[in-house]
Length: 259
Image 1 (cartoon, one colour):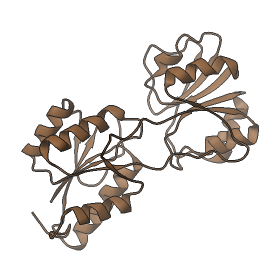
Image 2 (image 1 turned 90 degrees about the vertical axis):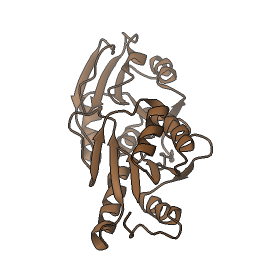
Image 3 (image 1 turned 120 degrees about the horizontal axis):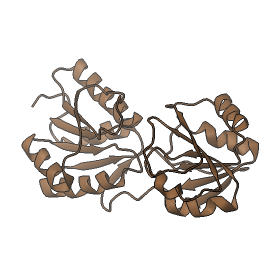
């Protein structure tokens, strides 16, 4: 069985690890190809074969699925990687390959949170001047053009790699990769005198401490809602559930049988 994982996330690496363990326990097991977008220069590599780069849209992905005899496709990309998810849905339909979306649960506001939801980065940018002057922007290095016209505001931008233009004129870049600690986030907000936190609803524990730190400090948080999963695509929230789906999807064959 050949499984293609559209990855780049913690959940994708965990699923690849579970499949590698399955193969080690009863070789040869499933064949796994991990696909990474290539947007990060030094990504954390998962177990199994790795390909880097795009497919050329839905048509190119469908051709790749056929050419490489893929039996199951798992979309475990970032919750905000909307384009590839819709390409995956169309390609899976065209190539007649079962598709599963693996999505970590989003964050939920609790008592004491002062969240302001936004439908997009542009919507978030419109909210900011009414909330404060010193922004902690944790939406990644892409999409900064949405905030480029806000010359009266100051931004601390945290990302894995340096952002490119266009971006806010008054900006300091902090190159860092999670997971982050609560003590570290508290100190960051204090040291930079942050009065507004801006984030995407990425979910997960690695970057959640900033939300707790903002709540403790009484700061507003602008939360950009994640895009929807394509209609008709089954969604699970964890790698273990994805592994069970793959086992069920094989029908009479199991993941422990070789191709």
